[in-house]
Image 1 (tube, helix red, strand yellow):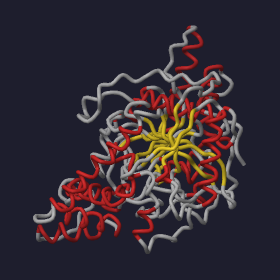
Image 2 (cartoon, rainbow, N blue to C red; image 1 turned 180 degrees about the vertical axis):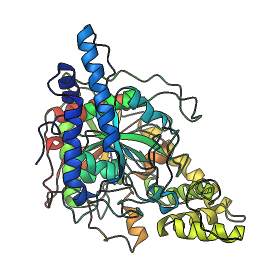
Image 3 (tube, rainbow, N blue to C red; image 1 turned 180 degrees about the horizontal axis):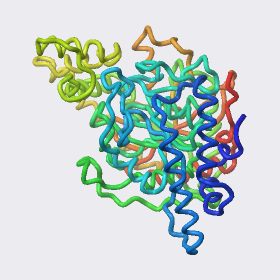
Image 4 (cartoon, one colour; image 1 turned 90 degrees about the horizontal axis):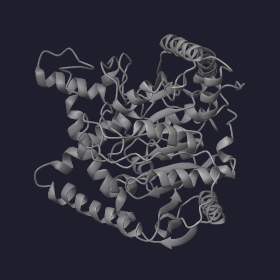
Length: 493
């Protein structure tokens, strides 16, 4: 049964903690009890640290007590808030397995910049969530530690690769969870699990401490129940980081979402290429209904075209594996991670990588290595980069006439466990609507807009121009002020 404390939004939790309505320990215990109850059914976490979380909750309580005695209100913005972190992102003193056996016992000595900023703001990390191995997957089934199950229907996937984070937030195990998005790994799980997830502009949030998959595509973001909550955490995580040369020194706007507002004058474009043959009718209908709601709120809706969308899938599956083949070369059994006891150096490499990596990771390493090999580089990787430029230009051209692009997150709702595991191409097609955004580097915000006939969540994604996340948050906030899809709680079955 859901505790009243775990049912609160982030804003409500923080306001109640400041008012002394309950303690940080009580809030933490409510979430730990919820995790203990549901974790056997969902397997959202790889590692949990309840004792550490309670010690930090007690320390947060002490800070609240001292502040009240001294009449001070200048406390950290997130003091006492439970937080989960995808197990692809480092937290000092916690395991970082990346969902892989090759890093099964690796404990990170440092914390990712974006997570550290949340910790400095008072958030308390309760554990590390399950992920597709090295973020390579769309269902969280390729994790070496077993799949995560969708809280709306445990016979179905939660999406991937950040499925553990999305499931944990949807099931009220935590109010917020960090994820990463290389080709849709925040937005697709958000859609499948009925929560809100932001994939920011590339370079908006530091990637320092995020284990690299595709370095030119990876972004770190956050899952919450509402756009207002996501905007709060995003504002703390974002900003330039000298430890990550790809972060941009662009001011982070103050996104204050508290008062209801309309969307008068907002120009919303709906790309015709995203309503393709084979899309689940319920998905298309719910997204179109959501767009109509945006129109009723004052938005001006028009049809647009992103003509190179159809090339995004092959382009992504050349560029991302090529970058992965280089990034994963560091797991050589010499410095950290799994090490097979072989006397010959090359045999040690072969045995370690052969046993440590799962089949999907091996598949992408081999594909990427082939695309980068002599004689094929220009024909495959080089050509893919040229087409990537065309996809980026499509978005640049579209944003000359619209402020926001609205489209489906995925062609279907959550599919059955095992449905695509024997068909890699079918799995890759689940990301057909999310990949172009990563290739272009623009931000995308996914949030729930209804259910299909099986009562599975349907999500929409709003896309913006570079560094225009504030417009996406405001549009989603306005939508959520007059709808209640984000308030639905799954009944596990």
